[in-house]
Length: 141
Image (cartoon, rainbow, N blue to C red; front, side, top):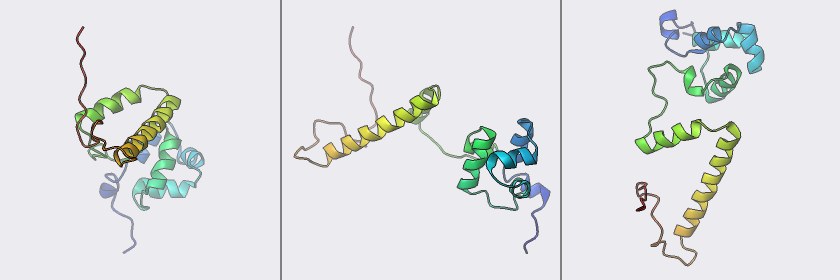
Protein backbone atom coordinates (compact mmCIF):
# COMPACT_ATOMS: atom_id res chain seq x y z
CA UNK A 1 0.00 0.00 0.00
CA UNK A 2 1.48 3.30 -1.15
CA UNK A 3 4.74 1.64 -2.19
CA UNK A 4 6.31 2.45 -5.56
CA UNK A 5 5.50 0.18 -8.46
CA UNK A 6 8.20 -2.27 -9.56
CA UNK A 7 10.54 -0.99 -12.28
CA UNK A 8 9.20 -3.51 -14.79
CA UNK A 9 5.68 -2.15 -14.35
CA UNK A 10 6.76 1.51 -14.36
CA UNK A 11 8.71 1.11 -17.60
CA UNK A 12 5.42 0.31 -19.34
CA UNK A 13 3.60 3.36 -17.95
CA UNK A 14 5.07 6.11 -20.15
CA UNK A 15 8.01 7.18 -22.29
CA UNK A 16 8.89 10.42 -20.47
CA UNK A 17 12.35 9.25 -19.43
CA UNK A 18 13.15 7.84 -22.87
CA UNK A 19 12.12 11.07 -24.60
CA UNK A 20 13.95 13.21 -22.04
CA UNK A 21 17.19 11.29 -22.63
CA UNK A 22 16.68 11.39 -26.42
CA UNK A 23 16.36 15.18 -26.19
CA UNK A 24 19.52 15.39 -24.08
CA UNK A 25 17.71 16.85 -21.08
CA UNK A 26 18.41 16.25 -17.42
CA UNK A 27 15.59 15.80 -14.92
CA UNK A 28 16.24 19.37 -13.78
CA UNK A 29 16.11 20.68 -17.37
CA UNK A 30 12.77 19.00 -18.06
CA UNK A 31 11.38 20.16 -14.72
CA UNK A 32 12.29 23.76 -15.53
CA UNK A 33 10.76 23.54 -19.02
CA UNK A 34 7.57 21.97 -17.64
CA UNK A 35 7.32 24.41 -14.73
CA UNK A 36 7.65 21.81 -11.98
CA UNK A 37 10.24 20.14 -9.77
CA UNK A 38 12.79 17.43 -10.43
CA UNK A 39 11.03 15.25 -7.85
CA UNK A 40 7.72 15.49 -9.74
CA UNK A 41 9.41 14.51 -13.01
CA UNK A 42 11.01 11.51 -11.29
CA UNK A 43 7.64 10.41 -9.92
CA UNK A 44 5.98 10.80 -13.31
CA UNK A 45 8.75 8.86 -15.07
CA UNK A 46 8.53 6.00 -12.54
CA UNK A 47 4.75 5.89 -12.69
CA UNK A 48 4.42 6.91 -9.03
CA UNK A 49 2.29 9.89 -10.02
CA UNK A 50 -0.71 9.68 -12.34
CA UNK A 51 0.00 11.06 -15.80
CA UNK A 52 -3.06 13.28 -16.21
CA UNK A 53 -3.95 15.14 -19.40
CA UNK A 54 -2.64 18.34 -17.79
CA UNK A 55 0.72 16.70 -17.06
CA UNK A 56 0.81 15.20 -20.55
CA UNK A 57 0.18 18.61 -22.09
CA UNK A 58 2.90 20.30 -20.02
CA UNK A 59 5.45 17.56 -20.68
CA UNK A 60 4.64 17.30 -24.39
CA UNK A 61 5.21 21.05 -24.79
CA UNK A 62 8.43 20.88 -22.77
CA UNK A 63 9.73 17.93 -24.81
CA UNK A 64 8.38 19.30 -28.11
CA UNK A 65 6.46 16.09 -28.86
CA UNK A 66 2.82 15.07 -29.28
CA UNK A 67 0.98 14.01 -26.14
CA UNK A 68 0.53 10.53 -27.59
CA UNK A 69 4.34 10.21 -27.85
CA UNK A 70 4.44 10.08 -24.05
CA UNK A 71 2.51 6.81 -24.04
CA UNK A 72 4.10 3.40 -24.66
CA UNK A 73 4.59 2.77 -28.36
CA UNK A 74 2.13 -0.13 -28.40
CA UNK A 75 -0.63 2.04 -26.91
CA UNK A 76 -3.29 3.15 -29.35
CA UNK A 77 -4.11 6.77 -28.53
CA UNK A 78 -6.92 7.07 -31.05
CA UNK A 79 -8.19 5.37 -34.15
CA UNK A 80 -9.25 7.09 -37.35
CA UNK A 81 -10.85 5.90 -40.54
CA UNK A 82 -9.15 6.40 -43.91
CA UNK A 83 -10.79 9.80 -44.51
CA UNK A 84 -9.66 11.14 -41.14
CA UNK A 85 -6.13 9.78 -41.62
CA UNK A 86 -5.94 11.44 -45.04
CA UNK A 87 -7.10 14.77 -43.60
CA UNK A 88 -4.70 14.54 -40.67
CA UNK A 89 -1.77 13.74 -42.97
CA UNK A 90 -2.55 16.81 -45.09
CA UNK A 91 -3.12 19.11 -42.12
CA UNK A 92 0.08 17.91 -40.41
CA UNK A 93 2.07 19.35 -43.31
CA UNK A 94 0.75 22.87 -42.67
CA UNK A 95 2.51 25.42 -40.47
CA UNK A 96 1.01 25.76 -36.97
CA UNK A 97 -0.71 29.09 -37.70
CA UNK A 98 -2.39 27.59 -40.76
CA UNK A 99 -3.52 24.53 -38.78
CA UNK A 100 -5.08 26.80 -36.14
CA UNK A 101 -6.82 28.84 -38.83
CA UNK A 102 -8.06 25.68 -40.54
CA UNK A 103 -9.56 24.37 -37.30
CA UNK A 104 -11.39 27.67 -36.80
CA UNK A 105 -12.68 27.61 -40.37
CA UNK A 106 -13.81 23.98 -40.01
CA UNK A 107 -15.59 24.78 -36.75
CA UNK A 108 -17.36 27.79 -38.26
CA UNK A 109 -18.36 25.72 -41.28
CA UNK A 110 -19.73 22.96 -39.04
CA UNK A 111 -21.75 25.44 -36.98
CA UNK A 112 -23.12 27.08 -40.15
CA UNK A 113 -24.00 23.69 -41.60
CA UNK A 114 -25.76 22.56 -38.41
CA UNK A 115 -27.65 25.82 -38.20
CA UNK A 116 -28.78 25.36 -41.80
CA UNK A 117 -29.86 21.78 -41.10
CA UNK A 118 -31.82 22.68 -37.97
CA UNK A 119 -34.22 24.74 -39.89
CA UNK A 120 -34.10 28.45 -40.17
CA UNK A 121 -37.01 27.83 -42.53
CA UNK A 122 -35.04 25.33 -44.64
CA UNK A 123 -35.59 21.60 -44.92
CA UNK A 124 -31.92 20.94 -45.45
CA UNK A 125 -32.85 18.55 -48.26
CA UNK A 126 -30.60 20.37 -50.73
CA UNK A 127 -27.53 19.92 -48.51
CA UNK A 128 -25.71 16.65 -47.76
CA UNK A 129 -26.18 15.27 -44.27
CA UNK A 130 -23.33 15.31 -41.74
CA UNK A 131 -23.86 11.57 -41.39
CA UNK A 132 -23.25 10.82 -45.07
CA UNK A 133 -19.71 9.77 -45.95
CA UNK A 134 -17.69 12.32 -47.89
CA UNK A 135 -17.90 11.69 -51.62
CA UNK A 136 -15.48 13.37 -53.98
CA UNK A 137 -17.06 15.06 -56.94
CA UNK A 138 -15.45 14.38 -60.26
CA UNK A 139 -15.79 16.68 -63.20
CA UNK A 140 -15.40 15.65 -66.78
CA UNK A 141 -12.70 17.31 -68.78
